[in-house]
Length: 244
Length: 226
Image (cartoon, rainbow over all chains, first blue to last red; front, side):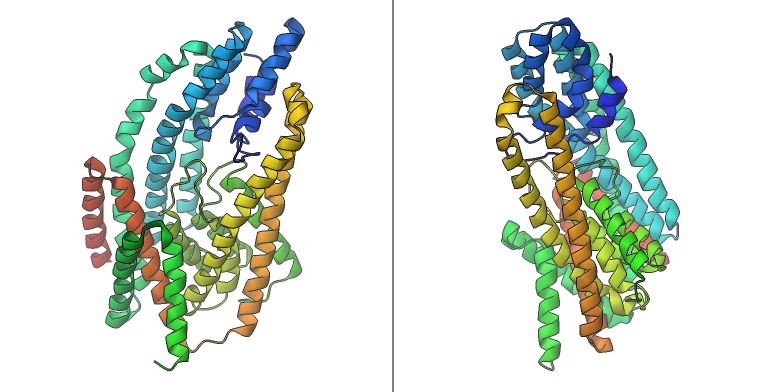
């Protein structure tokens, strides 16, 4: 695979041109350029068509985009018909989005952030920050290398390769640690902030928390947690100014 | 808010730009998480404790966000930088509420600015539609660099605006002790509500919910023992 490392580096910026029309498409085209370089000398016409296809609409979790990138680049070298490659890209959007979001955004990130918050409460300070950054980036970079290689090796059979891989198993396993870490973190962080405030302060903060959880659930997306916080702060300032 | 030297303000803008880029464009290394952004900003202004306190509280709000696809979400990175600059140099019990309030306003503004950048990216792509259809690699590169440059400009402007807002609030807003403490308690309560809502929602009704409950029980016990 020529240009693999350059493609890998460019994948780190795959969302650099994120937009509501092609989503990751242009970023994928940018990352595909080094992989398609050899095709330019072998078959310049095919290379031009491949570049066009590489920048068309695409969306998935950025950490798994290498699977689609490698697979479609391999398919271009194997002279697979263009419409078939376009269908492969389209077919990969949903599974790579769902698996990647579940694994990274809903699993790994809350798990590591939860652990970092627990570590901060226990006085780890910078070590907590370093642990979060090193832990996450080791996993996501290793995943990116694996994804690009697996995609390129599998080509049009990338769907089967994903199904056989560690990804579906990891998705199934990451939920409980994420839940545990967040469950641990929330009361510990609450105690860390509230320990110096005395009974009335603690009861007041917990009452705001209960009201916030209930009200944001009741109103749904029209009253997000941020809007609730700003509203509650505004009300407090208003009542204090009114002398209440 | 401690008085910021021009070079410190510049460093904060550079750091805010990097964390704004990290959220979506490049490299998504989690430096945009408010816990990281706030702590480093605290170090830059000479008050790591303020950065940790502001960052951890905003992190609880950020745990309510699942950044999937085209969903809209606040940008907490530059917000944590400006919030930390405002909180620095004061006892956190008094400064945290106001700082987090300012940071939340900025985070919402950051989310809005992210949508504008996405629209500008789409317009740039439309303008280069012919070159893209002709398979010009140079056009793809220019679009990519343009998109990243727009996001960097967004981050720099947002952080600069945040620092200005923090400076104006520090100079213009005078709160008595009870109000300042009240704001801090409200901010803590609202952040706990956000984190709990996010945790329960992402847990669903399966095994993860049971682990969440177990973690909460152990966490409550540990918090009580500390």
